[in-house]
Image (cartoon, rainbow, N blue to C red; front, side):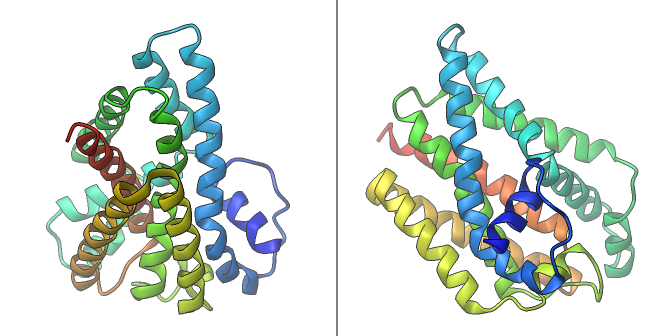
Length: 244
């Protein structure tokens, strides 16, 4: 239960007590996909209520805004920091320093605008009732990718927010998170969902390999960036599939 509460506390704005011991943080990664399902349930409800009175475009916009609010924009912030850092073209030490810089560059603003626009457009491409299981799956896959990256790649710094989660993170954490994601995705979407999961996993792993090589490991902002890109890829893959 502690692990689930930590995951909810970290990944959403739901108020949870904050005095958990550090050794419980790695255990929380098992519940990242389950917390993603909670986020997806909120998004599905928001889409349903909005679409009762407005167009699907408006419902899609509300879903994107709702996710930003419900997650506190945590992963979008990581996405923007990652874009700023990688676009700098600096060496490893300077690039890692940019991740901690509070200033926002023009490239990251353009990138996050494109990301949010892509989410909105792709959401409008998928009509009810197909949109509801997808809204459940999208944040689950995004949080599963984080566990994948934490478990399989080193952390680039000796200290940082991510060290609490990866300190005692083992392969069994990844196995349980993957099993939950696999079963849920297969149940809700069948073979297309499993293909989407495999595709997203391959892209995420390849991206993490390249970033780890450049940075000497990954950082918390990269986890957030991988999650955001994973959500967009989920929408893109399913939007393509339903037209085949």
